[in-house]
Image (tube, rainbow, N blue to C red; front, side):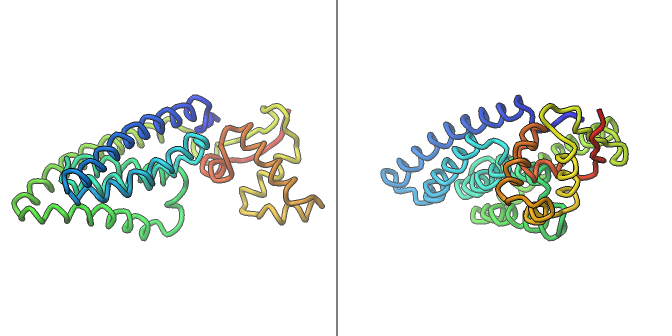
Amino acid sequence: MKSFYSKKFLLFIRLASIIFIGILLYLTGHAVYDVFFQKDYLCLAGLICGPLSIAILIFVVIHPTKLALFVPPLIFYSITNAIGNANPAFPIIFLELAAVLLWIRGFFKTHKALKILGLVLIYIIPLLLYLRFGFAYFAGKCLDILQLLLTSLCIIYIMYEYMKAQSLTAKDKILNLADYPETTERDAKWLSLVQQGVKYEAIAIDYELTLGTVQNRLNKIYHILETGDRIGFLSIYSNAKIIFKK
């Protein structure tokens, strides 16, 4: 079973974060000029969100497995684009990417309908800002957005169905931990417990170990499997049968 959090993918996340940081540095500098020299106070949102987004993305560069942290900068950027009357394509593209990242991290596994509604509302709020230019302008922007939304959703759905058809069904997924060096049969048992939702504290008590020992060992296993952390492991192997067979 191929890992999603491969070294190449993590390198891509780092490079993407660095590029976004560069873009945000430019946009933040532009916002400073607009607010303090052009007296364009609509750019205050960019002046506030820019540095926050940069700080978050710097953390992602250091910890690329925390790719869900891309979501706040994407939402900030969507809102500031709407306030600044920029191209309406940007907010919807950024929010679609935010939804994909949240889905990868398992955000929608619980209370799915409520969370999807919340994400939609986040987009609707900046969209309504276009009404300040009149209903005709707002309707034109909505038509542009609808075309982009339909096209992008078709692409996402087609790719999803293709990947689903190419992948194994959940019942056929097997993770043989013996295929990975430096792992033991006990590691397989621990991963099975994690898979079942057992807390680290309970594992430590059952095996008469300290919590730190269990955490460190499991983190090492996640690194070996290239899943990043517990959430990444569960998002990839939640339905897999875990064995240790040489």
